[in-house]
Image 1: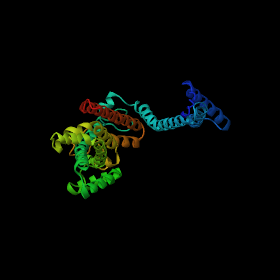
Image 2: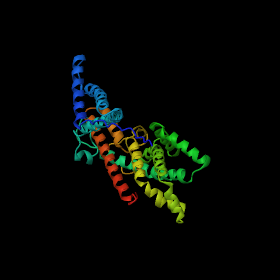
Image 3: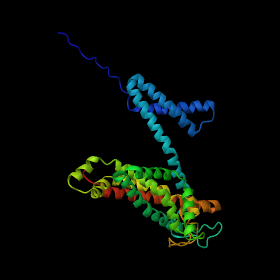
Image 4: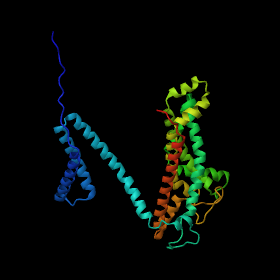
Length: 348
């Protein structure tokens, strides 16, 4: 009786934990020396050449010590990490520039005063009127877009079938890609026909932003609802729960975290829009608390006009940009708290 034994796998060695860091340091040193010989080295060129040398060197070292399978894993890890770093560079640089330039004029007075009586290069005056206008316009647009987008997504996922559902899907896809200026022109033409060419208000700007915001809400909420397992719906139906109550109590509660994230992405998409608001809300130096009548300043338009003015206006523009970033961050924190509070507990 003959017996066969499986071939014994040869376990390759392992690189020590400090090896990748040593290879990284060596790659940057080699890149610096190489660029010094070829031309004058810069931070960007050293980082780029050093990153390429590191990827090649760590793959070669891993293949020699750990074998080809582990070398491929390290190569994929290095490429993914490099892509992440490249994606973070513009984000970090943007935040750093906004913080550095916006902090020069940022103060409590800037947040609590408007531009009434401010002319020329006077350093007084602030963005209170623009902050209030941004909250009015974005708030009204959210009140219009969020319920409309959520109900449309529920229809497409839970009820929609046939030509009507396909037509709505195509319309949402088309609206997702329209330029923001088109939404502004639509709101301007609509209110010109209904009210007149001289009408300007926060409500007019909110309609333009709602046109941009609604398809984003629909698409994001639709994807979150499709991720809810059908087993949860079937279990609810088996208990005799009607479909509308299953959607409210089971589907929406399960997807609330993703829905909140999608809504915040939609708000962040429109809160910084400038082109639609230039022709709908306009600009004004004083605070207007009536969203249905009169021009109203918003932070994007305020920053645009101040930057075009030059001088100290450039500093006000960067401070307004920093204020806008802070508002978006605050809204994201509130959304995180809401999703954590309303998310279902104990579901594995």
